[in-house]
Length: 267
Image 1 (cartoon, rainbow, N blue to C red):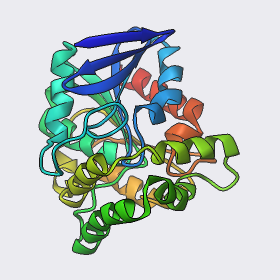
Image 2 (cartoon, rainbow, N blue to C red; image 1 turned 135 degrees about the vertical axis):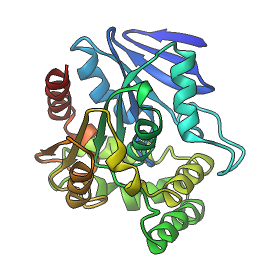
Image 3 (cartoon, rainbow, N blue to C red; image 1 turned 120 degrees about the vertical axis):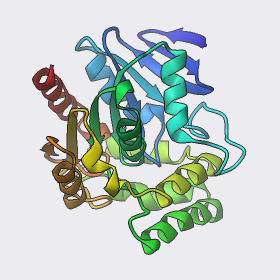
Image 4 (cartoon, rainbow, N blue to C red; image 1 turned 180 degrees about the horizontal axis):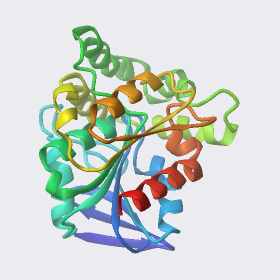
């Protein structure tokens, strides 16, 4: 495991992936959305780190500072999460997944509950495999990214991720991170989404779960998050005011407060 340090935030390479690492205490692993990277989780991670938590955020394969996979079929995202935990000697973590990252987190929690203390799904979904049309639309996004280029792709999609009246600086940060998306990483993530429908897994999840969603989320939508909370036994549901799909970036303090309250309850 290679480690670099800059001020309070450290940078690791674990399980073949780049991660940011801030704070000390019980570990939480933050999994970004399909249009983000580890830096998309920085604001939330910093708040949590200030409250006695070790906040780790990965760059998924082909994202941020992590190397590109050879192709969409060359990466098993669930296995890579476990590899990160193994290399960092973390038996169990609190797992926070946003959107696509939440779909990955759902599968990890359902199949490997011994590695997950708690599960937080932020603005997430069951995956795009819930219908052939949704799967096809997800796969078509890869061609759009290649044809338009990342800057134009981000300019077209990023405004939909934030709430009306979002702070322009925050909206620009969301756009800028999406503009860093690379086709190899995006294709692998899109294929995971298109091939996944977690409907049958939700009732089997045994780890304590929080589902939260921005009240103005029009991407995965509030009702999809309510469905997740309804189908996961004992799950808690929280609506984040004045936030869109990128709630963890738009309202990190409010999201952190909900997560910390959830952790106190299950502790």
